[in-house]
Length: 291
Image (tube, rainbow, N blue to C red; front, side, top):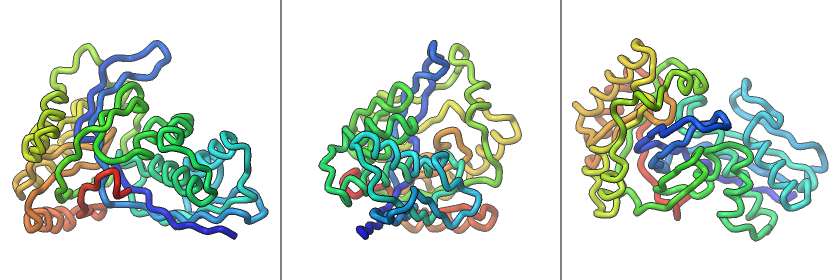
């Protein structure tokens, strides 16, 4: 039975802006996204002769279509007209769950890329991204990876010049954020501070890491309840004091990250935050070609 192991890399929002609420109930977004090395690992096995099966080292994750990895396999099978002769998906999770780093979407994208290769389907990355759009708004980006501008619900992607390679320290505080609740708290007409997306993309075009990092911002930080917002600010302050070029929250949170051009400073920030926060990670940015 054909078997393949694939990686599903986490994403960070270098910037996140919510532009307007749409008639369909969704919001138009403008975000600059970046892939990092932190990843889940997936084992795909086709030809099992049985029903689609998902297993994970986290027992609380769904084993059916509610798991985005399974949903992606089903949507791909529908698109190409096959059930893969039975499929088993094994997940080894490293990306925190409900952390604003697209862990589930990245797993779904890895399934799409992996099955495309394993079964010699010959689909382009753009075709896989279109299939992924029916699974989740972040899946198309996770298929493409690298540094990109994401608009609409996140599915309209424009590749950007790559962020210069650097270290990233990620810290997930011990609370969860409800994405629907956070969208409900944000009033697009009253957002006071927005990211300088044009300035950020211009810094990327210059290869200016410090300039890009200084312009990172996420409007959802201002929509958090005050106690949660205070903890996010505290983590950002630690990262900056330890030498981060910039720090921000990713997605709807609660993960906070800082970008570093000095490995020693990044290691120190990791060790400082790791004393208080169990889910702290030292990683690095990754270009699209290294997915």
